[in-house]
Length: 243
Ligand SMILES: CC(C)(COP(=O)(O)OP(=O)(O)OC[C@H]1O[C@@H](n2cnc3c(N)ncnc32)[C@H](O)[C@@H]1OP(=O)(O)O)[C@@H](O)C(=O)NCCC(=O)NCCS
Image (cartoon, rainbow, N blue to C red):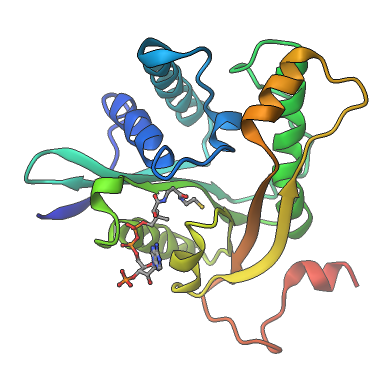
């Protein structure tokens, strides 16, 4: 089956992107996904509502963020989406100013507080290492029906070409499932990030989300500008600036 790389059409693609995103992170299930894209409630209707909310939010993020670049791979025999990725191309340091919280996808209270802390924890290693222009691979997924057929590779190739054309480093936070793809593409492991939000006074909503999400681990990975890393020779800019 022909799997073709394409840029997205933001006017039509987000419902299919959101559905493919959910199906990709449900197989195998990854508990942290709830932090970014929760299903509020039980059953098929709650899941459909969550996919719809995700599509609306992804579209709004894309429209409101000049750094946002999506790409996708389509099965041209059927028109089905096989996978997609969201990149942020930062031409300036994105951590120069603090970001106001915008966790609209959880109600105010303990659940939102938990998620705000989880997101702050999540970006902390990169906020330390990537205080410069860089490309960030925020989301990447291949649908379970299309895995190990080069979908992830096509998505990555496109972003890495864009990064190289702009002379930029690439950072990402990897799940356990992403690491083999990134290691095969010259990314270097930088830091393990075990995410366990904590509070002295958890309310029921905090406890419920903590129970659902469980502690989760990501690995910060990095690819230098141009992509050629040599152990002991390639300078890691954040180590220099840390003296
Ligand atoms: C990670 C993911 C996007 C990889 O997509 P994919 O289309 O299956 O990957 P590709 O077929 O392009 O793999 C390219 C290369 O990466 C490596 N690779 C990818 N998946 C691998 C795996 N499960 N085990 C070992 N190596 C793997 C291999 O070197 C592979 O080349 P090969 O198949 O010729 O050996 C996919 O597994 C996925 O969507 N996982 C769930 C969501 C997720 O965790 N995303 C990562 C977020 S950081």
